[in-house]
Length: 251
Image 1: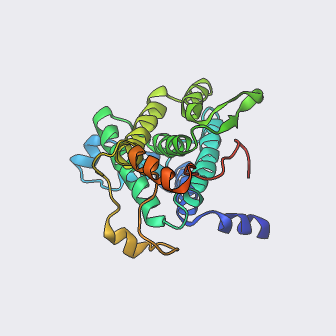
Image 2: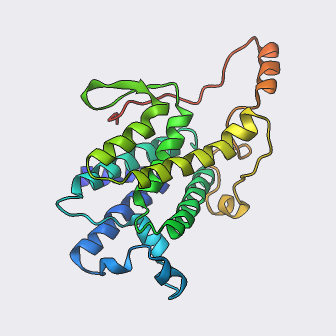
């Protein structure tokens, strides 16, 4: 048990709470401590009956059973792996920026869920985080089941097909990928690569709540191409390194 506790405490802070909630809420529903009907996202109950907790519980809840248990465990694994890697990689030392990414993706998914009557939001949020990780490590070669190897940028779409085969819904994975792409484009691609306006910025209250663990200003990424070329001329070339990549299943 001490080894399990040490492993749990080693998980990055935000991922740890998300991971724990994704175990606790399904367990509460499975044990009948709270009826699962109160944990789904139902637009009528949320809007007309003011059951404002439903977008939160629908993010953590998953109906675990004989036909869904494997799908749940696989996506719980994806949550742990790729949320941890983002939090300790591109967002290392910037918990407020990582929390903002999760909140932005979550709000987009909740709005989509209300419009499209999506009752469960766990998989879309996990897939949105996985998509961002895959784009930040897009040229890295990853290994998947049966020894298949491909660039990380294709990973979200491979997992979309994989989840569909083992019993998931293409809509959930597709919404997650699209929301992840929206965040990546607005936060990284458009302002940093294309030199456009920065539409997203982390609110100051998140920095007060989750201050940077290292000095410096908030924000990260690579500058527009014109600025990179100027810097390379002065420094003798070189490229920005987003960090070390990982293979699926690495600890």
